[in-house]
Image (tube, rainbow, N blue to C red; front, top):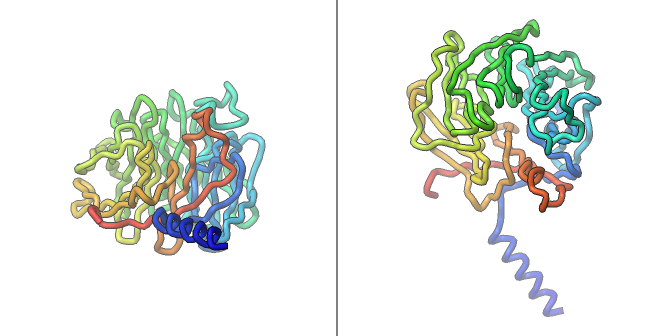
Length: 322
């Protein structure tokens, strides 16, 4: 009995020493989710999947439930609820043969779709093809809305940003060499109420400013550090930028600017001990930032067995140096 109690005490001490931030763990074998959004109307997280394309829900207790699926989703990525709160918009692509179970020559690096699913009925209401807007490989990765409800979508394989207006008409919004990369280019995107987009280049880690009125006047935001592996981004209530970085850094940063994002500085960051697992995108639940641990690195590593569980982790941002 003494031996058992001693072992339990050691385990407790070890667990405390390795404590991480709060996680909501959910079982969904081989799902590999990449996009996440919280729906405050029903209190559910919605997550995408690069292996099946299906959209599922996760409640606060970690119960996963498949919510939307059809045979031609291939792989789903960034997601956002529109300003009306009625539609879930999802980026669909086929960027990597190690991802989707139904990849094919007809869709590989060619598919570029944006769909809208009615949150009340769970039925698809819009399906917009972006692939004909620019001649090149395609990987629609993330999206955002401006104050009028227009949608902007990044393409990680072509140096462009697409626009879908409130009538569902798609067009090429911006093209710039700063958007390009040998691998993954543009990724995360947010729309600032000051009248411009902020996007990141996953390849070189830069943050770019794109004026809505003059999308040809792209500029690099001056920051003391770059963020190779930059993925999802969010704007908080104070218009600070939350940036998620993976590629083995696996941290979340908060940046601010006092001159409309000509310059910016890093104010807060998560700690290495929090041990995020290939974090991809994030969402706000009330005023807290929750990050999706995608584990996508496992799909290109044959030595790693497929994961059966994934998690949504609280990001506790701390001042640098603390």
